[in-house]
Length: 564
Image (cartoon, rainbow, N blue to C red; front, side, top):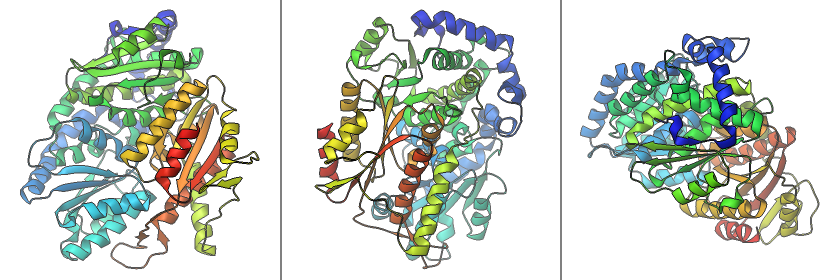
C-alpha cells in the first residue's frame, strides 16, 4: 500500500494537508462506511445504494466455493477458452486480472469481447473452438445492448456446433437480481447464474462477482486476490486516521490538486507488468469524476515523452512491482521540475486486489473534494440515446443518417466544423484550437489490434510533443462505458478525434437467440454508435473531428500519423 513517504508533492503539500484536515473534521471516511449519502449529495439515490463495494472482499470470499466448483468442473471437462461478453465495469477488471496474474496450469484461457466492430466479433468466432468454449455473459443492468448482441450471436453459433440440448451448458451469467439477464439465463438454460450485490456500481465491482468469477474460471488464485482486498479494507477503514489511511490520503491529493490547482490530468506511469491496471483505473476515475463541468482525466498508457513535454496540469503516479524496471529516470526528472509525483511499489501482482480497493476509496474521496457524486453517470446515456435514434432511422429508411463530408481525399473523408481544401488543412485547423490545459482523445471505431494500437500510440506521441497536451486513446464503443462520461461531463477542454472505417466483413445480430431472423448487423450497430457519440459530443459543445477511412485502413492510419 502507498504511504505518504512515497509522495513528492512539493508546493502542493500544504494544500493537501488542508484537504486532509477537512476530510477528518467532516468525518467523511466514517460516513462513507456508515452509508451516509450526505457526504456527496442531499439525495440518497445512486449514493446510499452504491456503497456495497466496501464489503465486496468479504462477501465474495463467502461465494468462492460455488465459483471454484464450477471452475474445477470446466477444467475437468476440457474447456479451453473463456470468452467474457461484457462492457465497462463488467469487462475491465477481469481483463486486468487475466493479463496481470499468473493462472494455474490446466485452466482455460481468458479473452474479453467488448467491441461491436464486426471484425472483432468474427475474429473470436474464427479463432475459438466453440465446443470447448464457455461464454460468460456479464452485465449489471441485464440489458446492455452490446452484451446481448454478443450473446445472441454466439448462442446461434454454438447451437450449430453442439446442438440445442447442450448449448445452454456453454453459457454463464453474472448480473444483478431480477435483471433481464437473469430471466434470459433461466429461459435458455444457462449452466450457472451468479447474482451480485445490487448495491455496487459497475466500475466499483472489481472484487465482486463481476471480477472474481471470470478470474477464478481461468485459474487465478482468487482467495489470495481477495485477501489483499480485505487487508486494504482494514487499512482504509473508519477507525484509521485519515493521515494514515492510504485510500483517503490518495483521494484527498487527487481531488485537491484537480479542484484548486488545475492538476486534473492524473498520469499513470505503469511498468509493463502492471500496464493492464491502466484501463481499469481509467474507467473508475473518469466515470466517477467527469461530470458537472469538472473531472479528473486519467491518462493511461501514454507514450513516454521528454520531461518538458508535460504541462503543469498533471499529477503523476508511478507504479511498479518491487525489483521491476520503470521509467525511474523520467520520474526523477519530473520531480526535479516541480511536478507532483506519487510512487507506488507493489510486492506482487496479486497486490492488485488491495490496490483496486484503495483506488475505489480514493476515487470516492476525490469526488467529495470535487463536490460531485462519484457514483452516478449522468452523461453516459446521451450517446446511447443518439445511437438508438440512428438505429431507428436505419430500420425505417434502410440507411444511417450520414452527414456530408467537409473534404474527401485519397480514401479519407473528413467531417469537421470548418471548411478545408484538403485533409491536412482540416487536421491542422482542428489542432490549431489546442490550448494549455486541453487534452486530445483519439476515439478509434476500428477493430482492436496490436497494429492499430501501435499507430494510435505513435499519434499520441507526436501530438503530445507538438501540442504539449495530455493524450488518451480508446476503442469504440468500449470507451463509451469508460471515459465517455467524462468526455461530455467535464469542463469541455477535450479535442476529440473520431476515426471510423469501412468494414471488410460484417455479421448479423439475431433478433432473438436461437432464431435466424436479423434486422441489424454489427457493422450497422457500431456505425450508429460512432454517429451517436459524435452527435452527443457536438450537443455538449465539444470540439470534434471525424476521419473516415474508406479503404486501406492500415495505410490510412499511417498517413494520418505521418501528417501530425
